[in-house]
Length: 551
Image 1: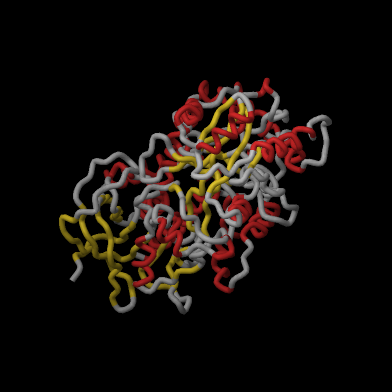
Image 2: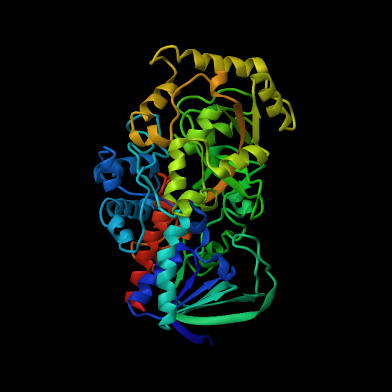
């Protein structure tokens, strides 16, 4: 017999769980939030994020001369998602509803909670293969003033306010191992209480047990995240269409992002779909100051770096930095190697390299206007300069022979040939004789600089890589870095988890990455950047409201 506990149990204290809790407590419901990690991890993965939010036809866009709207954004989404399976019916509905929200109420809803945005809109995942191909037609990546912590702060504040009123209780170090069903409905959970832990946020915590627990509720909302910290699960679900799974990967998320609740919810009758759809980056670098195991940082690159495979061959068009994440990943898996290279100059790295993560952007995270203006002045941020000095994937040299020798010194075999790389660079540099030419990447760079935001802080003026005045030369070894699950628990638009027959399981809801950010995969095969945090917000809001109405 389960102990009567509360109206709603939420499993996971990340962004989706906090949003769901805010909605449910606003409706007067009593909520208990469970999380296997200690209290210092409140906010989950979102805390570590760059804080990018997908908005459509925002004032920030309009001020920069960007013409956007629902029709264009929805066309981009569909071209990017590539929905083609019978089980994509609910994901497609979620996607359309989300784009409508992003083009409508979303910005005002966030501003009402105190969220503000950096005035320059970023243009991430811009495609490049044509008007009907994947990618954003216009810049839509709105960086939150305060980055990830700035996104989660309003919802933590709402949770603490509800806690003070006696409507919400956090129970950290509570790991759920079973969803309890009574007469077909989910009525509670069972699990283990783990020993207290004072490890820093993101660091691995002990799995030693101190006891068991059992709790009941009118509804259970699962918001426990994806699988990016569990490389075994990543490899198990790796899609054959992307080639063989890499032997070597680094992690863009902490180890506790382990996918545990996916299997537990499936055992309770929930249907999992699209588990072979996932979103990992190819521009990962090893963190010289790691917090979690295999801790990697993703470079958010501008468009100018020369991208070479492990043998020094230039990647085919339009696989340029910042254009097509999954297309680049699929190509690199055909090379037989788990890494690739950027070759660039000091002038490019100062202007074009942004490091993902709240801790890598102290100016934006700390809301320092003066420090942020340094991005316009150039010189690179202090975290970037630290990686150049201490990061094991960086080679900085004054001439090409030394650069190639340094690149070869980082790999088990010296695969790079100086003559091959020199030819690739010189062929590219010749196209800068005129303000036009046949190099498609340089054409894309010139096109990017027509957008004021890119010209100000994201795209360097085109120049010869071998021009000593632009140096020194820099090479960066790039690894695959795990990040997001695009599939998950099948849900309807109220966040109710559906069973194998497509029917809602009474009392069971899911939101965030565990539900593929809505419907079991609202992104389809590929994601437009800035839509992961937004998916947690949107699905958490839907599940919290629906569970609050029903319980």
